[in-house]
Image 1 (tube, rainbow, N blue to C red):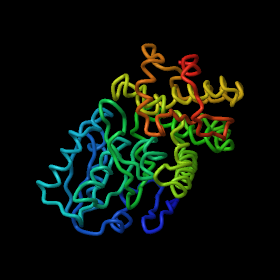
Image 2 (cartoon, rainbow, N blue to C red):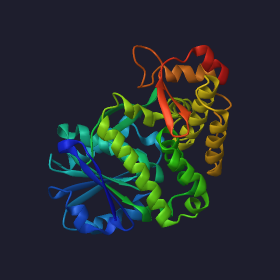
Image 3 (cartoon, rainbow, N blue to C red):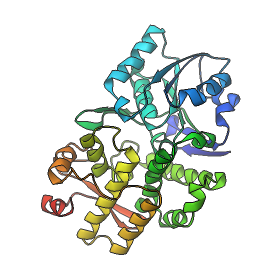
Length: 354
């Protein structure tokens, strides 16, 4: 088992990475402070893993809420559903929520934990590549609004993250590939050696070789943990983790949540950001081609939807959370393994590439 630490002073917490963690009753129990536990999952993941998790928690008073699957379910309506479940069940401040699922479940459960009775403990048990390498670590919690993704939320850290590699064996290939967009993102934004390692290990990753997946997930989580420790609330360097997300979130909101998976939208967004960087003479065309080739290896989209042009993008991007003083801010790669925050992008330049 690999154990990493997210170092945030009194709110520090461990990330455990191994196969079989759902059955590690002692380790799970050590992060639950009282008898009451509520598991939040969805109707895809729950039938696969909730009984295994409940068996590991047999010494606790456990109930569950199972939501429908999909990005469209990361809503205020389902947030209220969780609140009503907790209140009806007379859960108190000593209850621990456990998020069993992908990014949607992790985000909405974390937000519920941040808000219920002004804050209760929660544990992340991510079951997708995307949530294991990215969204379960760092304390960003939220629900979507029809006008924008993740617009209603809070920074609220979990007590622990349990990454059970065994859960990836049931992950559909489209979901696996979508998660790889976030993996590739780490290489582009700040680790050229990792990017090259990914290029060299495409076949092994696609084959699901456990040692390779463990190394990949550990590298991503360590990168995320380091950045979060330095900048928890995205006042500076943490914004780099949004590479591809300015364009990607616009695609998701415009097309309707769930039509494009988050990772698919981020993949197209990273290519658009790379093309913008090339147009601004910040990035070599050869690096853009490497980005496109690696994303293509995992069958990820390289272009925006046909029905989206400058006008569709700009109306969503003007609501982006990174914007300051009304100026659009973009995360742009300047080389494989290097990126910057740039607020010097004209709308004329955007019109050229969108």
